[in-house]
Image (cartoon, rainbow, N blue to C red; front, top):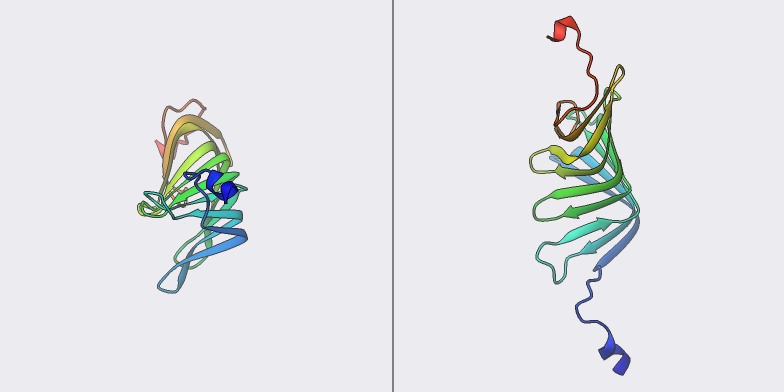
Length: 162
């Protein structure tokens, strides 16, 4: 009994643990998002907002209205907050859209409610014709319409784009 009483009382521990987890998010029986994680730790006891930690990486697949892949997101670490429906992806974050354009950053927030992804960290976006860098960006979750803050790369414009 002395050993049990000596354990730390405020230590936060997960209520559920899962390995090789796949979560499917649907709306009206239509597949919208698939999340895969090697390890999932759910914390929903004694916290102000329940959250899930994905400590060994996360891979998210976004689907369009025809259930075709519209974008992917991968990161070495993720935290998802249940009430605010927001996920923070960290370390070696990559987002690839349907056109093959790739976003690379160290931190990205995905707002599930607004369907937006954004960061204030350094970003590198590689397209078929150019590499654009900047400090911060915001995009739709499919990463097809994005705005880069404080651009530091070179952008080539065609005359028809002016």
